[in-house]
Image (cartoon, rainbow, N blue to C red; front, side, top):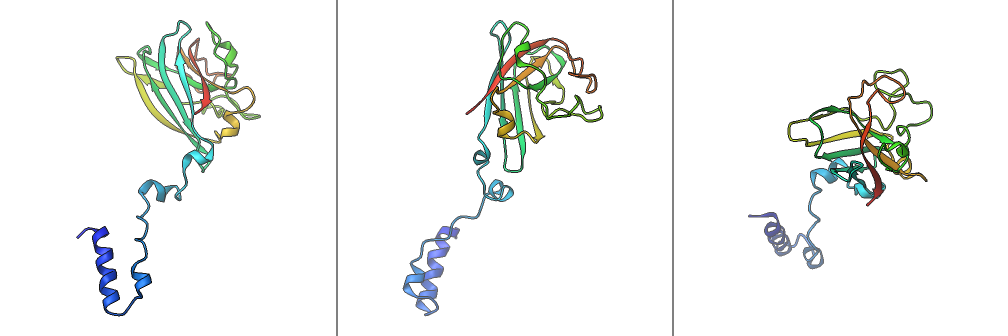
Length: 196
């Protein structure tokens, strides 16, 4: 017998035995148990911690390179999801940048990497990494890539400051230590993160 049929049957049995009142037996069914996600997050709606930010990523000639989504959570750790396409096969650097502006052809308008005061670039550098430093992206044949990263301290306040936040794809891999940007080469695509 399924749970939703079992509960009324049990109430009727307890009522006939005089163990509960008619009012108690007529009470609505208990709420369904929390899902695994609700249990893991304490029942909180992740969007309540600031909502998601999304960027459409494009090259200077307008070629689409997919999307980036940043979902802040109540823990202060954001989930950064890259769903990218039309990329060169190989290893490329991807970073969040300090300014939400994508003026081609070089995308220098996005400024440097998104960083807190005193941070250096790269996980191999003392005082690193920048909050906007993401792992290199390994692009398979066909030019697509999909990956999720957890990034601490990437809060809505950091993302949505007065000049916004950009996302950049570079032509080369990040060496994770050269200052200020990992010797990652030209900026080949850009997107501006906006709140959904």
